[in-house]
Length: 138
Image 1: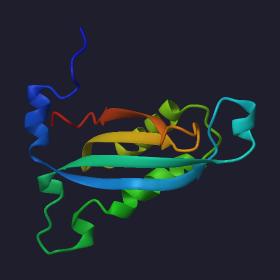
Image 2: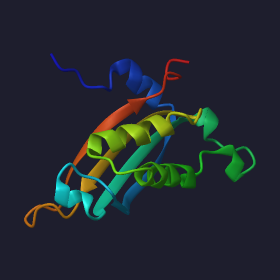
Image 3: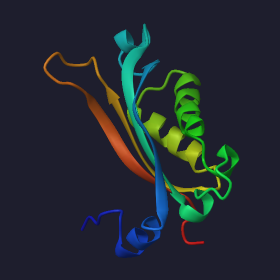
Image 4: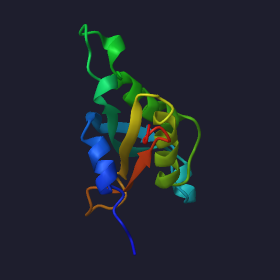
């Protein structure tokens, strides 16, 4: 039996979080399993919602150093997308998720990626997944 990744216990933890998101980040990415996909980068769109405990995302002095900077999320996406040719969107999302979870303030994230130029009659094809920190229960 499949269960949703957001259990009642996890929902309780996430309710005490602030969401930081990057929406519709467009990049050219070297990705694909087919020979023709290895010839040139493809258009992709990324969406990331990172969950940060309010204690780590509620500035006392209105300072950028007191929160997770949006640039960190955006730069993580672009850095992982630029490392090397990757065959699968799943692999790229996993790399982004693993990199985001290295930031101690981030306890969970939902990441999706889309290829936007695959079919003429489809806006996009893609994948999405949840990523959780081992710090979630702390």
